[in-house]
Amino acid sequence: MGRGVPYPAIGTVVSVLAGYLAGSLPFGYWLVRIGKGVDIRTVGSGNMGASNVWRTYGTKYGIAVTLLDVAKGFVPAFLATMYVNELAGVLAGLAAMLGHARPLFLRFRKGGKMVATGGGAFLGVAPLPGLICLGVWITVFLITRYPSVASIVTAVAVVVLTIAFGEPWPVVAFACVAAVAVIVLHRANLKRLRAGTENRATLPFRRASGSGA
Image (cartoon, rainbow, N blue to C red; front, top):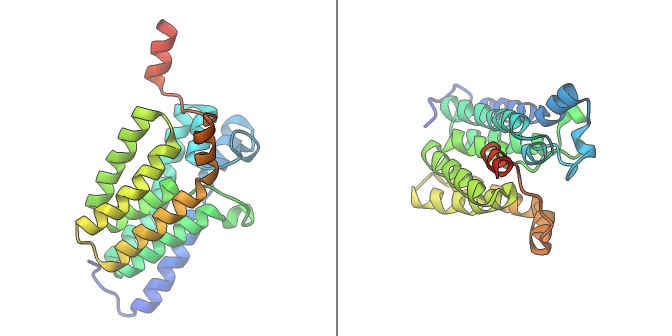
């Protein structure tokens, strides 16, 4: 529960603006541009999110972008929940997701698919279900090596867990909206999965195992 502020409406507006600005930080674009001299939007799936970075440039870049994208959703959602209320936390989280999808710092051009940022935001407003969902994502990803499959399965799990844990209505509504957004944004991935053309992410220990064989 939030501690409350003298003017919650103002606190909510500030939280939403801060969430959007945080979400607009294009870490996938910046890290690849700095480290590889490449615009991540011109390679792979053309997405600047962690999944495309991971598939294209490997674990080191993938993990770094994942953690940063999670953080930019978690921090504004958590702070707004703590110092304003749950609704402000949810709105800040949604604003961070919107910023990731249409980042201010890339002139509102197409960004990422909001999975890592949405996961961080959800962790900020509902820590226990969020941690369980993180475990779901990791488990499905390790089994399939498809970030898209892990993201879609986790999106469904988010809705189930928020209801099961009796979270406040803003959190349940957030889970439903985020789940629909994630699934819609993965339409192309679903088509590639059906066609058998979706690329798997590389894992270091599997690469080592394959080299040894």
